[in-house]
Length: 371
Image (cartoon, rainbow, N blue to C red; front, side, top):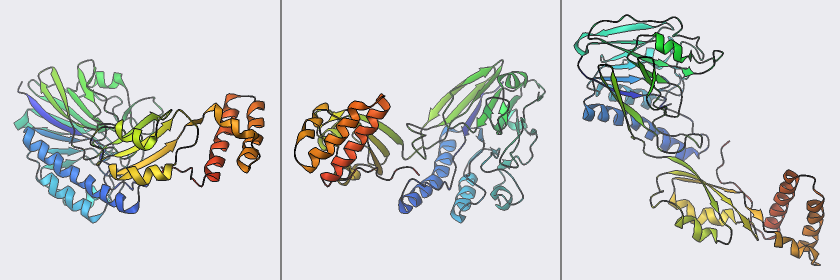
């Protein structure tokens, strides 16, 4: 059998609202998402792939911006290979969906039924199977499915779903279904974390994850997959086409000046990325998050700061002072000492931090936190 090279991507979620960002930066991110399409087309060309499989949730909803539809047409037209799209739970197929309304290029095939159908590609010695979500949920589409074996022909699947319990609303897939399917490779979507190459019987399968993070539940490097089939062998290589990444970093501030310590502990190039920095450790006073944000925010596309530091025990020493600060701490120290659990002590410490921040005219805030 000849080799077959596939570009496999899923879960672009174009036109995501990016509610955790300001309106201006959210608009920038949506524009950058559309640019992912052009980078996919460029990758397909540079890798000389035979097939492009887009396994659902290419769009975040059925309501797309005009610019997104135009860019989708332009980019897919530039792919020098057949493209297959299996709509998922976010971009499910209907008569009103963008897939029905847009005049997609001739090299693009969109699966439109909630049942497995196939397209034969004799020039590639391949048959591509797939199905569509036609509403926000789907039954188990692979249940009872088994394709025919033809000598010298690859059986490929493009589908949105999850390998999970049978009661899932999102096309639950089992390893046994994949093993029984007679497929050579199943290109799956829905799971936003890359699975790596997996195998059930003689069927190879994977989820590529989302190609670019959209929030702090999608941190780190995100990729698409280049999959090469060579007879019964399969190789998967990941390629990063993302422009930005989300990262969560926890930094111990004990004995440190946060304004000096934070830049020294981060990678050199963070200016294009979205960071959440969580400050930890014991300190005498709460870190001034507003001051830190004003001085450090230019190092990032977007910065969130969270204060999880705890008051150093010596801070209670001023509880006996005949001052407003001393009286405030005295009352809280009494509650702290009478606390019945560690959780209650932490709450008292948190109250002390907020109060001290107010007394010092500082501000206990989280910048641009998630809704």
